[in-house]
Image 1 (tube, rainbow, N blue to C red):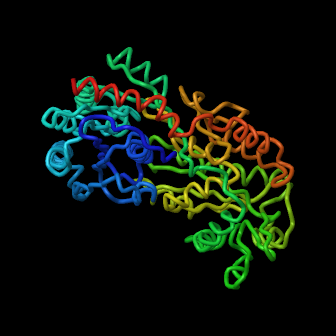
Image 2: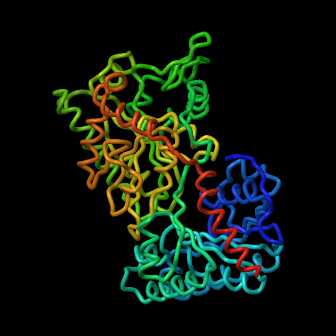
Image 3: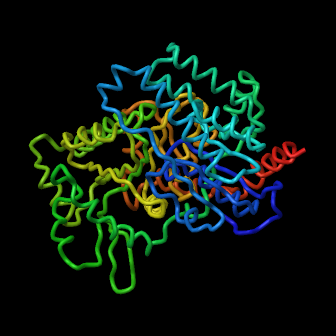
Length: 484
């Protein structure tokens, strides 16, 4: 993002970014804060929950001030289940009064509140009332629809979902302005909600880029313990490499250093990255099934039978033998409610050519990993069918082609056979993995074509130029109209 300064917007020279969630896991709102500080010369107060560490660019900016709220305490599952309506009510009231206190007392009066939606309740209510009391403008950044996410757990026919929908629509319409993430969502808001929204596509900031070889090597050195010591014992990645990690060498799983030269190893596994929030709108089971299919289909293609010992395969691979199809190492990043359940499923898998690692990376290392990978996988399906996965934007920014689950508006982002592929089943994904990685690393022409397509298309606009073109005029207009 550029560091250019401009004349202040608004009479107070201040904006508040509101997230009823972990700010470290809300990259779009972090980018809003950076742009408000850098491109609009505003003092920025972020009101959010703690948890994950935000990007260093946010932490180090003297114009950005983070205010961390106390979270609703964890309730035992059995109590939550028995008294679900009461727990839901008291949680919403607790969140409302905590948020309202911060917005009205703890931070200085801003010219504008910019709030992430979802969650909608009680966020939109608290921000609307605070904007009225503090004579501030109020902008909603629509990432998705909250009622559709609630519908995943309660069912669309639930009375709670209907009530949530009403609150979301009523207070969404009460905002002074709206941003949204897709044209499909813009159309839905205009046609069925009576809300005029400006499309601000997610774009990668400048720190999402292909990773230079030296930085790849340093990253893999930092991650080698996580990569080479799986919880479930040995697998195709670690077998035969334990001695390597006990030596003081310049070699990693993927790279090697000789004198001053760093190069990628020819017998390295293919690195596939997926980022997930481990929630019901991402079917991680589809990826596990595809991995099993890849493993079995490669064995069939190479005429291997069940008597072929996995240790023999691993020893041959680590001694330098190259096969028509490579080992695959899936690195799954992210935090969420279903993580432990799927980690247990992974531990039970018996695969010869596929390994999994789950990890949480810093905001600085995550772009480096994407820029070092061979393929990205996106399992996001969208509860509304109207939002786009920011993780794919980040992958494209790092020059990484993507295989993504197909749904209604995903083709606004993924252009089939140009920068990625789409799939609707685990079998389709397995077929795509076989096609893309055949001949890896030097003769996988289909994968190279997609990567070239990502690099050639590039991003004509990075986040700061897109924000300057679409968000800044709306914010300036809303503040100006509110002041008068």
